[in-house]
Image (cartoon, rainbow, N blue to C red; front, side, top):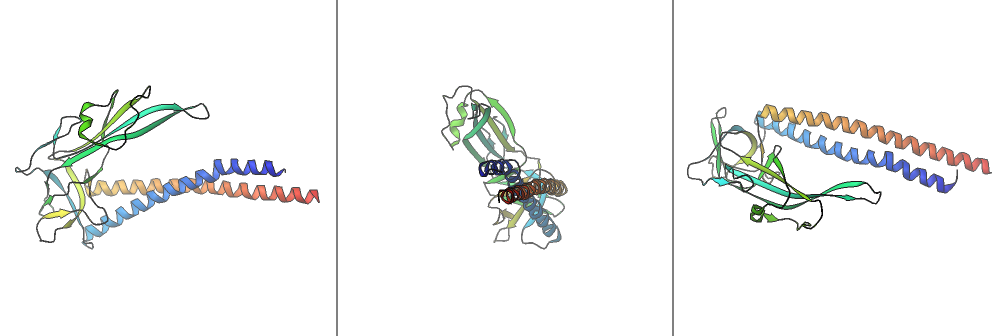
Amino acid sequence: MHSGTARALWVLGFAFTGLPAGILLLIGQSLSDESSTLLARLDAAERGAADERLVHGTVRAPPDQPVLVSPASGRRCIAWEVSVSVHWVEKGSDGKDSRRSEEVRRGGAASRFDVDDPQAGLLATIEEPRLTWLREPQMRREDELPGWADQLTESASGDSTRAGRWYEVSEWTLQPGEEVSFFGVAADDGSARLRAPPGDGRIRLFFGSPTQWREEGLRTASAARWVLLISRFFLGAFGLLIVALVWTLARGRLRST
């Protein structure tokens, strides 16, 4: 086999087996780490073997806190976060259409709120203004950048003159009466105030019960196992390709001698 042909086959083999194997391996390992960490934290918190507390209850709005309004929908809420991204379609070097996107605005706000956990006999107070939303946002499409987007922080200028562009609005809101679960660390003064665990940096709100949160973690773990299994298939195919190329090259050299 000519060295140029072998090199071409090597590149094609890497593109169709080695590269997918590497990408899938990274994705699968990330999902596996995420799910195992969540399940371990849930187990430790439920046993009382961790410094952080697992809270599950109903969101309440203290009467002395101002009501917030999401600029995207005008919805009255306790907390909101909005992201606006611009989308467009462009042709790649192969002549095929490719969808592109870029976030251009993001903003949010949160008032102090309480979570009533009757099982633990706890009324937890959350003063952390930064939240991580563990649920899908409400989304809608806009033909132009909305005027209210000026209230958000500009994350990128975007291309407002690109033909065929459109905008996508993603909105998260927290309403009184919603069921949430989260990990929190008690304040140093012994009050009912909770703050985000040091490793999280912000309160991670799951909308549902700890049982549902655990079920989602188990589904993520199952998905991780499938992704890792598929990555091993591609990795095995890549290994067989390398063996075949080495054997073919060695055979060609033997013949030439």
